[in-house]
Image (cartoon, rainbow, N blue to C red; front, side):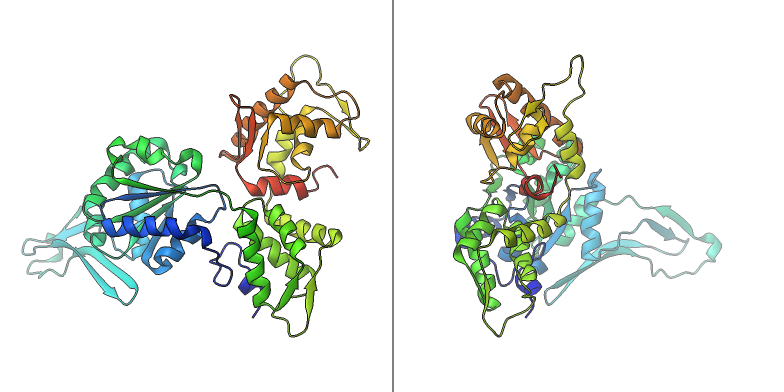
Length: 418
């Protein structure tokens, strides 16, 4: 048994699956699937375990999973579904003077694998010469083909990252999903929280036909259970305080916790199940090695560089502040350093930001309006650069919210200022 089989970032965690907090969510999912004619909307932050939850609750072999990334039309989405099903889509039809060609879709089930065959059955009796044959294009009704293939089947179409689909395309997809679920085709769409209602806004008629299951980031106690289960499987004793430190660094992400635990094994030479006593201590230098290895799994360098630069300066230069570490920095570099301070926090209120800024500066600190203005600009720069909302600045409540734990982890461990 190897460590990589126990701690599995990016794969289903067979040995370290923690579901204490998923009981009510699983019941809601099972009830919705059993009821039928309902769209299931799953929302939660990036890397919060949405996909793993769906795979475990339904079974990977019963999911037709597609992603919204790269979808620019309704047909392109359904074509991805048919490709996964193995459906052959006819594009042309050939007829001759004495042949009659029909179109039919046939489905067959074998064990847990559903194999769909849909196509023009062109085994015509040719009484005339080949020169009499006429080939014409077929107009395929993808929605009806989808219904024909999956209605009343024990399969669920899972559209992950629905928010990546352009808004106008979302609208048409939502209309067709409504028709499909009426024919008992099962659908799940997954989005990040700030896009959780995209599918409803795309088609308000879905209101009353949708079940919402919301995820949040994991608390440290749940993350600690990943480590406890995994290290026990490997015969490793990890100091309880070290497990808590790793859980704090993971900032609510079970996937990041998997990475940290796996790299803890690598950093201490425990690549497989141990036959002798193996202890992972609570050691700061070891923690740094683990985190610096883990940060290699993500790269936000260009995004963070632009966040530190801030918007283009017009007129006088920004004020540079003397910092206690001997360096100098403007309000933008100060905010990045604030995010890197212990303890790791995804959400920082204005008072927290001010306290962190003061802890870094020798004397003069940025004004409150300078801090809030920089937060607003920095969030826009980060989101535009990343192509998605990875930071949110709530100007009404003066709250800075980091949406991706990997961004926070990169700021803390990416050696940005070295």
